[in-house]
Length: 86
Image (cartoon, rainbow, N blue to C red; front, side):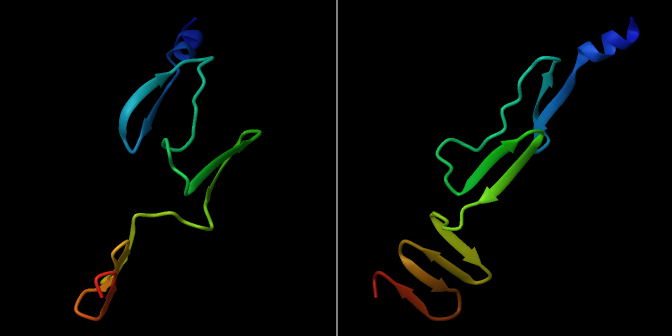
């Protein structure tokens, strides 16, 4: 009947409000991280999905306020810098 037709429609899944896709009864949704991502882990236990952030981050750069730390050193906009160039 009508209730079965509604269930057959399934539901939609989107990421960040884009790329919505229909999920039908019996479909599997795989929740994980982007290929090569080492800073974020995803684990499933029963019906619970847990995200965790690595205690030792591997990043290209970190910016906080006026300070930026990357492979070339630490640069503080309007202040001192410690760089590989000296």
